Length: 259
Image (cartoon, rainbow, N blue to C red; front, side, top):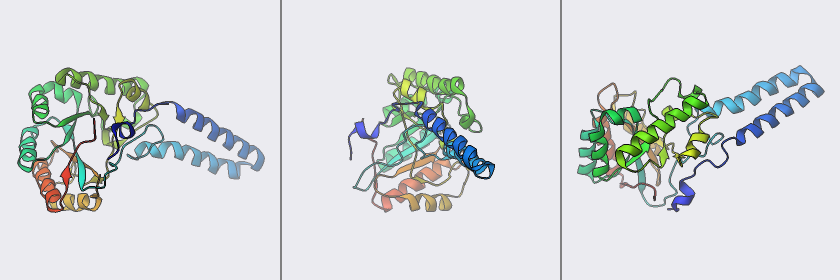
């Protein structure tokens, strides 16, 4: 596996996209001027799509670097669990202990402040903690402006750092979205963005069989597995346990990236 310098990629140029945007609009203007609106208008729409679509693609790198899988050759995966802490956290920790598995919990800052004992227990059991925003604005994270985005990252970083004694090094975007204003606070706080390569949509699908089928299709050496806790359907613990069984059946161990 590569060293942490190659995996933990903090954005170096948060505003690099501005140059690409300016260049694209200049090209559109020249095309419109020389060939008319029949060419210029489609080019304008396409140029806008090139900057809007990546907002909704978890592994898109236009606005910030992102780690979507580990460069492993052995049968190991990085197990990540989003949206906690919750009523499910303690049971999930027990399941991880039973299977001898390690995970990174991407926690929501405000929820962590409400349940500091669970945050402490995650650390005590040897698991990692990542930043998953402060309030988890799922419906509008992609549309946050620079101040709101910076506040989401900063307040969660402060909350989690205060509870654990060490600020997180990894950030998981809400719903996997990003936008032009995410990279700056990530750079300010030394955070690297993490996506995934195997997911089961367990936050919305309560059927463990379907969830495991989807996760199984994404399992490869170095896969980053996305799971959730506290889902409204109430079966998150069962799904985590089933996923751990699936990993064992296929001969996969769990490991976190080098720190």
